[in-house]
Length: 273
Ligand SMILES: C[S@@+](CC[C@H](N)C(=O)[O-])C[C@H]1O[C@@H](n2cnc3c(N)ncnc32)[C@H](O)[C@@H]1O
Picture 1: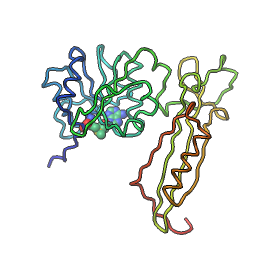
Picture 2: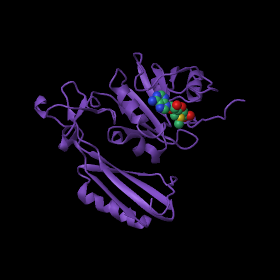
Picture 3: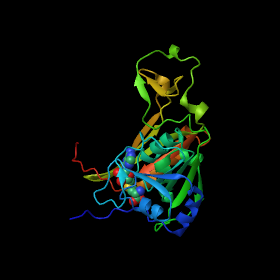
Picture 4: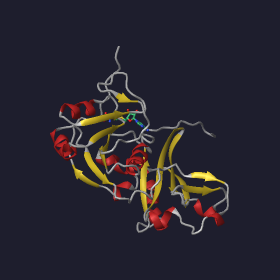
């Protein structure tokens, strides 16, 4: 028995019209899933490569079983990432692509997912088309012109021992490279015996930029740690007020607050847990 279809992005005419300008490129569909977008593009005469770290049993297009973060793009590639899994995937995959020979990365997603998929990238890319699929997906286009070379995939900062004296001049990721420092706010709803909201706000850490361009966090480097705030509340209104108050600690001129409110998560606990 074949598995149920898992087709997220279902492109419409507007999408294919937008893609026309890339007719002479190789479109690399990253996280292609069942490959239906790759197949549709090929049927319209585009040259396509589909890759997915976890190729699907019922894929309709040949899919390379490769991780987006290590993929070696052929020359003249354009990266396409449609309706990615949330988390670091889209950010890391786009950064990897734009730090290779890829000149253009095309993100297709739902408008309300842009911030959590791309974090600070939205400041560097722009929405170029809306309503390109069945669920009114938008397109953000990111053009590489060297400006992404200072970026590193989130989480790829290397932790190691060493002395700060090794780094001369000492350059930090913020605020010199990226002016706006992200703050991730997470709201967890606990239900069970009563209900409460546990809210955390975490400033992105501030690693040292080592001469080879990688980001390094030295053990014991206090200046690297981001600030961290947390609190418990009984109502969503109290949560909103607290988040509003965070702007005093993380002002909009220097920080951007990203809110991850996964309201479907429930942690059941017993009194006294
Ligand atoms: C939500 S699905 C979207 C599939 C397809 N683009 C669509 O619109 O139907 C995301 C896909 O990304 C793949 N994926 C997740 N992380 C990946 C990675 N690091 N490298 C390559 N593919 C990845 C998953 O296996 C999954 O098939």
